[in-house]
Image (tube, rainbow over all chains, first blue to last red; front, side, top):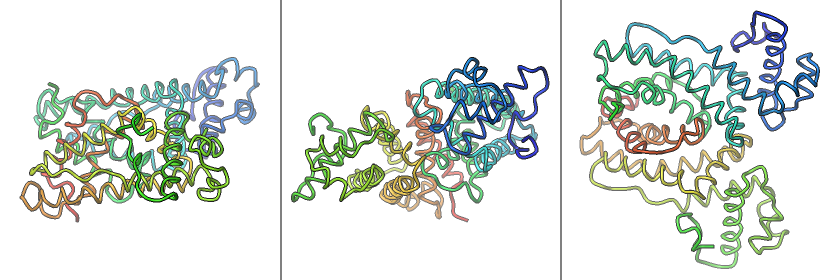
Amino acid sequence: MTESRPASPGTLRPGGRTAKVRGAVLDATRDALAETGFHALNMDRIAASAGVGKTTVYRRWGSPVGLVTDLLHDMAEQSLPAADTGALAGDLRANAELVRDTLTHPRMGAVFHAVIAAAACDEECARALAGFYRTRLAEWAPVVARGAERGEIPAGTDPVELLRAVSAPLYYRFAVTHEELTGDVAGRAAEAALAAARAGVFVRE
Amino acid sequence: MTESRPASPGTLRPGGRTAKVRGAVLDATRDALAETGFHALNMDRIAASAGVGKTTVYRRWGSPVGLVTDLLHDMAEQSLPAADTGALAGDLRANAELVRDTLTHPRMGAVFHAVIAAAACDEECARALAGFYRTRLAEWAPVVARGAERGEIPAGTDPVELLRAVSAPLYYRFAVTHEELTGDVAGRAAEAALAAARAGVFVRE
């Protein structure tokens, strides 16, 4: 399974049986989300494909919502470190390309469609998805701080607002208009956000 | 019903019985989407609340997907004309505020959550939603052309790319991160898109 999904996070976990069980169940949850989506998520089938007892899955995760929220916590923990190319333009482009590569990855794109759908119809999933993005944004915030220190953008630029501006055009196409993330959509998203930041649009009042 | 939803489009339709039937069925579809979402859409209940025979609804719309796609066609037809404040900054702000007002309107916000969810799980709904946005963007494209003629942005700026950039941060919060569209999020979306346009980010290659 690990070999079959090199790009998907959380496929290698050290540590004891509990960690191994969680890893197997979350991998199975990711597979199920990618293949059938949130509405078809089935605790018994996930237990079976994870090779874990049903009672363990019901006791530890309780419901499909519990599985999705734990998967999102795990994805946040596993997320990659921020870039440091020495220039804000390069770091923002790397961030945009990471988002685009995740959303266009066949399995991870399907997982994100599923978790966004889950968040749309369940408050707990929505909170977990928001938490996932908070973690991602916090990891990348230093990129913006370094850019401000280098004088590439105005002091007082809100890192989260700027990083949201990089992600927004990609997610808008992915989740709302269902346009393909083709051409240089990632590069344009990064350039547009940087131009707005340079103009002072994201400076905290 | 009309009085109860002043801000929702398509509640006043002139013309004959066919138009009246369509109006009643689409109003009932909008109500059902806002109240229970796409997955609970029920043809019989919609026929009943529209005061239209089930056979008519099944014959003309065929399925819940048929109802949602026709509602989206109707919403596109009913959409408001573009602003013309005399300056691109004002026109883009008006566009951003229109998007924000629609997404934060109790009933229309719920309808948009439902049609976005429908688009996420049905290809035909996705095409209809994309068509709705194409129509909206085409209506607002002259705003960008006028701004370029006035020299406010570079010649060759892609109107659709610029207008997408205005909507994206609002829809990203609405449909993905589920953050409230509070404060001056609309104003910032318009300013950020304009700054990027001024920097030439949306000039067609």
